Image (cartoon, rainbow, N blue to C red; front, side, top):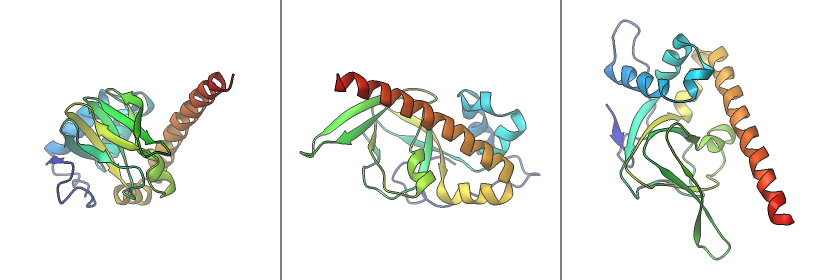
Length: 175
């Protein structure tokens, strides 16, 4: 069952469905993942295993998904809607750094390093997210270490691409 952000069960550990019991939520998550770039990085079996550790969340327009400095550790894959990623300046004003569209992954830094959120994410419009929280990722690492390593490689590639892009933009501002 999917939940809205801010609902009481949001950060509880997701339990994988037993292999013998078809889970309609698992099927929905798998279908949502198949429509993202994650589907090109994994075969169908791997994607199905990955989906078992995730949950679907919904956020209404203008709902804050997380706030800079928060210590909730999860990544989200945006499957519908738009999300603004914002940074606070030295005067406390928030500025939109980027607006994310369908298929984009965000929030992975806190999942990887356990640190506080480095930005704020706000739903620009009603959104559907597929979420992997820290407890579920720990369970996935224990049960499927090869899959967890592959996920980490994909995340490392995403972060590397973002760093290269950011470095290129930084040079433009220095000149």
